[in-house]
Image 1 (cartoon, one colour):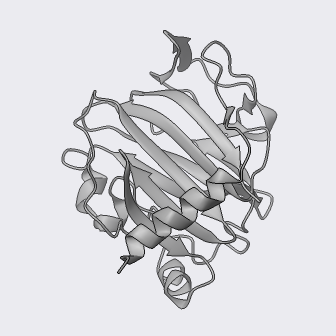
Image 2: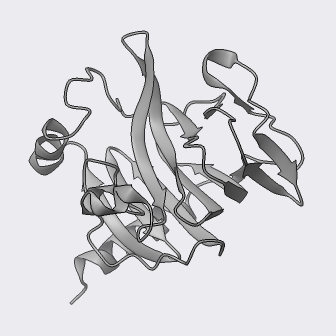
Length: 217
């Protein structure tokens, strides 16, 4: 008998077998394909060295020039001690003011204060909406992690270091109830099932590399 987690992996792999090749979202040399919010230039806190995208100081949010609906996105990251960062997806501009989307949380769970604010604020959570459903094998600060988000037809998966740690169905009653209890409850149009990808800036040191995305049908 196959477990739900195994079935999810099999379905994901079957889908990806029919998908195209992944596309790099970071060439290791430039910020081609990314801008600051509303087309602004990225702040000086963002630098590129040794094939890594690094944040050290005020850099502002980075947002992809392209929107995505169904996709398989993976990246590697490492964060500073007591650090905080995140990757958001299905990001759109709400009420003409705020760029918002679902966030894959990246945190020093033990030393950053947000790690004490509940499991839906810890690494690999759907930030402030849903906690991971399995233990998260996060590495210590300063060590590279590998993360992955799969979004297809409203169903979401969060992976961390090769482990499926969270699943959500945005059409389900559970998701809607969680969203109604979150900080996004009054944000009409939040995460509409398509949008840009965003790399956040919480003024903590973080590095990224090997950002790749595969669009799914």
